[in-house]
Image (cartoon, rainbow, N blue to C red):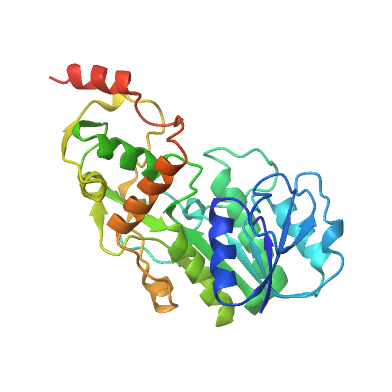
Length: 317
């Protein structure tokens, strides 16, 4: 199978390319050529820029499938499809759970849950526009490719090479052990999918030529935020005491803390039936810990600093 990956050298794209190569697929990368230049030295790289609309490198060649990892606004998707013309068999778009309406979400909701109204009049990405812009992208892919369109909606993705601070923060903090300040209720559900499970789902969907939308969520067993911290501690061989603290003392957008709990309980049934594996969370945590230590544990942008955490613990009644 010949696969074109639009954005294949960062976290999720890197995992998808790695898994595709495992199956013997021929992979072509399209991107700016500025990140991950040391990765996949034997692969063909097409250079372009989605922000400026430079898709000239896609005017030639044909592929059995396209995986769009880096499409965030309708212009990105539309220009890519225009450049490809009829030279791509299937278009698989990596979307997001942010496409869903917040109101009325029930635990265990499926891919048929109501989505938010699409937005097309801006390219500014923020909490209000990210999901609706992804909805518009989904609609455009489906309109153009019909039965040859596939939509994958990941939840929170975690694993080695994660450039965000979600699971990485908790893995690193739990490894230090001791009293852990949690600015949320420990019973908050949380869904974390291993990037390698997401990648395996994507490659399997292409191999099986499947259409439709699929939730990429995990872990294998339902887990709470408190339980996740305990699992991270076990992966590190540490012991922790989880101490709930006031959210008012925490930085905004704290890693994995969410107020909309039902959105953390979406059904993975369709993706599991399609072949998505379920890596145990402790394995994911251990692999993230090993990777983080190997890279020297650089500063994180989210969560408490040690000083902030001590102040939050000291202020607890």
